[in-house]
Image (cartoon, rainbow, N blue to C red; front, side):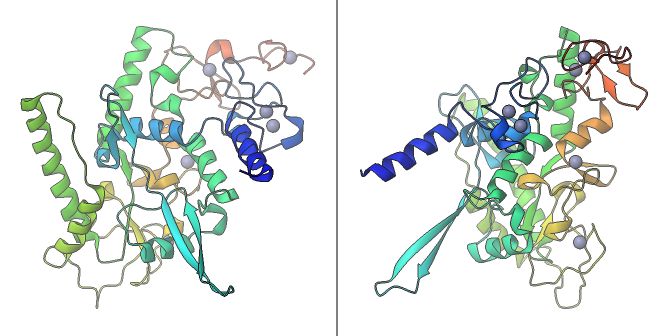
Length: 366
Ligand SMILES: [Zn+2]
Ligand SMILES: [Zn+2]
Ligand SMILES: [Zn+2]
Ligand SMILES: [Zn+2]
Ligand SMILES: [Zn+2]
Ligand SMILES: [Zn+2]
C-alpha cells in the first residue's frame, strides 16, 4: 500500500470515527459532543442531525427495528444469533459504466447507498433521474449525506424505541409508547414501491402472496421453534412481474394514470411510486410527489406513514398523535406538559434556557 492510499484510508476512518464534524457550521465545531438531553451538539449548538453520527450499520439496525413487525418486514432479515433482532436489507445499487476514452476498455463503478427494491437497473436508474440530483443517494455525494440527514430527522430513533428515549419518566409512559409504536407499525407504516403505471395489480398480487407466505412461515416457525427464516426479496419481485400479466393488470393502452399528489398525468413509460396502505388500484405518485404532506420533504427510502388519506414522514405522523417536546425533541407521553404562548409543547423541566437553565417565562440575559 502506498502512502497516499494509506492516508486516504486513515482519513476515511477518522470521518467514520468519533470526531464527527458539523455539516451546518463546519469549522466552528470541534467534533460532535451530544448534549445530555437536547438532540444537539454542545460544541457548536447545532442539531444532532447536522452531525449525522453513527454509520450505515447503525442506520440499518434502526431501520430493521422500525420495519420489523410491520407489513414491510420482508425488507428486513433476522440477524444471526441476534435474539430476534432484524436488520434492514437496504438495497444498494452498483452501476458499472465502461470508460470509453481509453485504449483498453476499463470500467468505473458508481454506488447508490439506496435504490428502490425489486427493480431492474434500467428502471432504478430512470427513477434516480426523475428525482433531483441533490436527493440522489450516490455514495460520497451531498445526496448520500442528505439521505442520512433525512433518516435522522424523518425517522428519529426516539420515536420508535423507548430505549432511545431519555424523557420517559415512568413504566406507564413506557407502555403507552410501546402501544403507540405497535399500532402505527400495524396500521400506518409502509414503504413505497416503484413500478411502471399500470403495474399496481401485480404489486397487490405480490403483497397478498407475501402476507400468505408470512402467515405460513409464522405457523411453521411456531411448530419448529426458532427456525432461521430465509427471505427472498429478489425472488418475490420477479414473481410479481410474472404474475402481473395474468392477474389484475390494468389496461395500459387506454388508462390515463393521474398522480395522487399533483393530479397531473404520470407518463406510462416513467416509474411511479405505489403505496400498499393507499391501495394499489388507482393511487400512485410521481417520484417527486411522494412527499410528507406536512413538511413537503421527499420520504427517505420511501418510508411513509399513511393517515387520513395523506402521506406523512414518521416525525410528522407522530406529531399528529402526540405532542413533541421543543426542548428534547421526544414525543410527550406524560399527562402534564407545558404549552407555551407560541403553541410549542414542552416537558415541564425542559422549558428552560440552553445556557443557564432558567425557565423561559422568566427573562435571562441569553
Ligand atoms: Zn454546528
Ligand atoms: Zn457540533
Ligand atoms: Zn405528481
Ligand atoms: Zn414531514
Ligand atoms: Zn423534553
Ligand atoms: Zn439563560
